[in-house]
Image 1 (cartoon, one colour):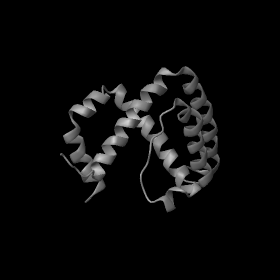
Image 2 (tube, rainbow, N blue to C red; image 1 turned 90 degrees about the horizontal axis):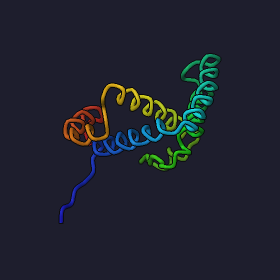
Image 3 (spheres, rainbow, N blue to C red; image 1 turned 30 degrees about the horizontal axis):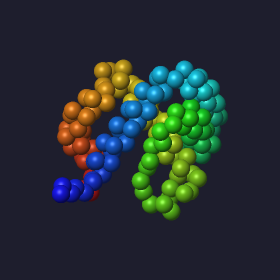
Image 4 (cartoon, one colour; image 1 turned 135 degrees about the vertical axis):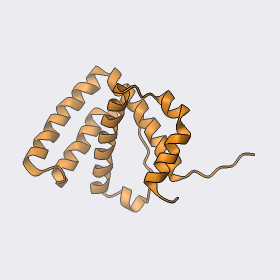
Amino acid sequence: MFSRTFTQSDELLRLAAEIIALSSRLRQSASAGARLQTALQAAIRQRDAFGISHDYTVQSFAQAYVDGVAPLGARIMVSGDPTWLKQERVAAQIRALLLAAMRAAILWRHLGGSLWSLWLRRRTWQARFAAIAGPD
């Protein structure tokens, strides 16, 4: 039958689709939006006190993701070396980046982007992701 190996660009496309779908759930849930807004206010205070790249700030943005986005149900599975993924600092960085990706997805939707447009133009996006990710 048909066999295909997944590349990094396929993985990035999958993550993008999951983030777009999750951002839709976030937009539809007023309670999740309120929780996220409250958590983001705390994260912004941390940023103002310590700077954007300080561990406390990153942890605060990660907590905002956990408080506001995680209760929506679907978890975004990140693949990688378990040795790294089990480290709390790395996990916090990933959650903070997922929060930033959620914001990017919401802005993309404001500009007319949708899950369908991502799907219909997936070859173009895969080529762009391949250029970002480098060689497989």
